[in-house]
Length: 422
Ligand code: HAM
Image (tube, rainbow, N blue to C red; front, side):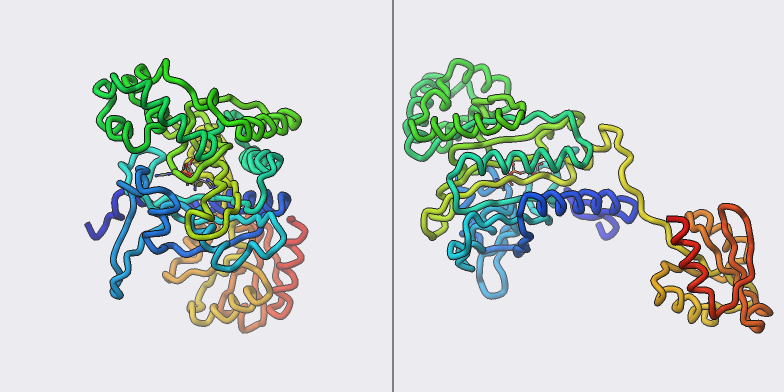
């Protein structure tokens, strides 16, 4: 127990961090180009926010939340997603008073008590964006473009965009009735989960992965055919905007998404090589979320990308990815104690050089081997006699060349050599 992280969580080890930073830097860059500013939201919220925002009958809320009571008796929940929190922050900080649309992005861990498997974790990380205050279909297209632009900037190209409209509360409630009517005699043939969904949330039956359920719904009516005029026009405008941008997409009338707040545009982006967890991005419009959590009726749209899944997709695509930069200098000693060497190492660091030294009293040979293993280009050799003479020897590990340098000029010498290298 003590030597194992909780099921569904993962350490991100130093060797993996450069890949994460690569992801984060590209995400920041894409958001800068598209005009999305960073927001940092709390890791937990009042449970009620997710009950109302995400919806009580969703799997996320009904089965997957990490909910606890704090010492003050409040019911709190580790955030299973970011959209409800950002909508709460938008309202709390009266962002409706700012120039609309308000466009923000976030990255960080989310928590869902789901059955762990490859690409599915209990603590996972998302990069998400949200834009509030505009119904404009071109904004839907911009949000989709941001997701694609970013994923392509990472080097992912074999992406598939699935697109649908899930309508508004009016056309959806009419459709829910026609779907129930079509499935009425067949409820027994559905999987147990869909049996429950029939009453509570029949739309989710459409995207059940169970083959029996798929067979039962094969002939069922589709929401795309029953959209009201407003939703149909909006969806046509979103598609026209994407067509004008030359974006390929699959119209997927079964795409309903697992969160209740969606209205109109819904989309997912799939990447190859991920098995069952091929969805790396999910998003859509949520024109009544802000109202649902107690604010005015302000529209919004956004998406979230699963960072672990994207990194898996990059690995599957054979992208070796980023590596950590090696330190600049290793200070090796002979006849000089680590405590005596440390002030010189500090001088190098203060001059902006990443400098390392030995703390295990290794032989000089072992120190050189260590420096080589770490990929360090320059070694500063500090010997007892040299120190007394105010000198050090700098060894270029690549060429093997050695040069005596005065201690006073060491930082400038190394800085110059490193500059030449870059
Ligand atoms: P979601 O589809 O639940 O949407 O999650 C978005 C992405 O997070 C998924 O496509 C997947 O890549 C990743 N993800 C979800 N669950 C897990 C898990 N258990 N393990 C690993 N990765 C996972 C949302 O969360 C919405 N808030 C997206 C959104 C933002 N819609 C509008 N704005």
